[in-house]
Length: 106
Picture 1 (cartoon, rainbow, N blue to C red):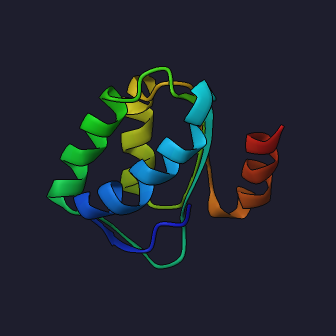
Picture 2 (picture 1 turned 90 degrees about the horizontal axis):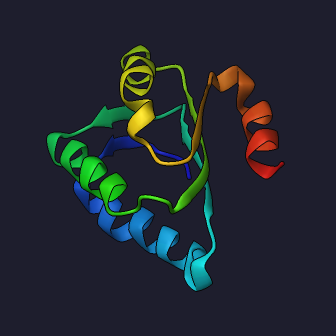
C-alpha cells in the first residue's frame, strides 16, 4: 500500500481494513507493505487512534510488515512502538524500497 497525502481514520476504514480482511480470509496471515514515500504528508489525529485500535484488533494477523519511509518522525515512532505491531516488522528507507519488496515476498 502506498500512503500519500494526509492519512486519516477514514483511510483505515475504507482502504486498510477491507484489504486486510480480504487477505486474512480462511485464517491466512498478512504480509503488509506500507510505502510512505513521495507524497506522504503524515497522519492526522484520527488516524493515530485508528492505527492503535486497528493493531489491537488484529493481533496475530500479521506475519510481516515492511514500512518504507524517510520521514524522520515516523522512523522514530516505529522504533519506539514497533514492538507493539504484531508480526515481524522492518523499517526501510525509500532507497531500500526494492529490498523491502524482496523481504516481504520471501
